[in-house]
Image (cartoon, rainbow, N blue to C red; front, side, top):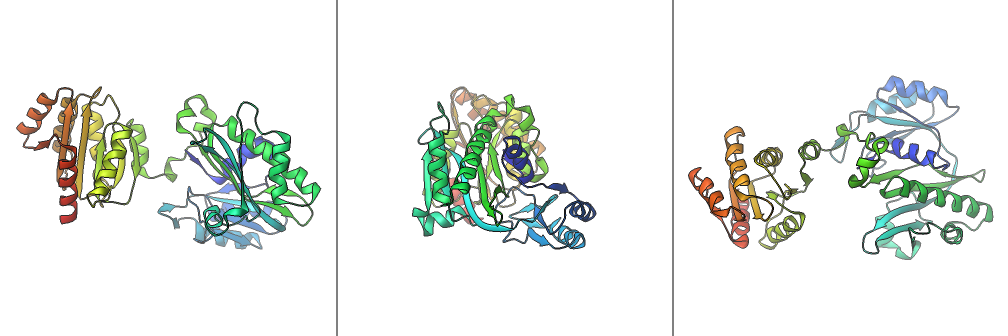
Length: 378
């Protein structure tokens, strides 16, 4: 689950990190009122779950409260990477001297948290990694011991030469690690981590992602979820107990099991197609799950064919077949459906589909190749 910047800053502030003041506005008038509380220039920042807000025009400097209102009026309602801005954060402008990058993320290969820091902050870390990889310093942290003082100093020493700044940055990194671990995060990022002309280190931006699997034990974090800021299909899928990720292709995939779903998408690409989504209906599906899955897939106008690839272990293939038949009765599906069912209750499933006028395959290669052919024809 991704958090908005203002939500991430609340977590950072709770960990003791030096984060500037700021309030959220949903109207231009609210933005002006907030700007009047601060003495001096302010920054109006779009709150969406997407990077590149500044490049898209979603971050503006305001010299006066009236200008803050004008910027908010322009930013609210704009689209950034397909997401509509419904909130802006109004925060005091800082007198920036230097900008750095600092983040903790979960390194799944090493199975432990990893710090990444760079003196080249304020830009996409991907750009730094591509153009100047030596500018990034990495450190894995053993979760049994946490970030040790000498490790924090070693990281901070990458960013600054001044002993006072190094001391401040070391403390910030310790606090960032605490925020990361206490919230079961997968990413906690500050970009930029600034120094001011008066010699202070501050986190003026924040990006935070939490592992969905940990939310059941953190209701205070789960309450941060903003369903208006995420794709509607992903919200519907989560509420239906499905795992769904929107992709850019035209072959809509409905599969049971994450491993089989990944293999199916690989095979779609192997035969010259592009998957439109990752959709896992789970290991013990029922007909309603299949209906929900088809409703979500068909809501994407880019989908030109729907591919079912079901291997029945725990999953009963006859349940899936009944779901397909029921879904086609209740949903106006305008694209062809190709189906592969094999495993538990396979004979009953194939009979159900045959009686409903569907042709089903048992070969994975054959059904994927057919799906790609139909998508390309469309």
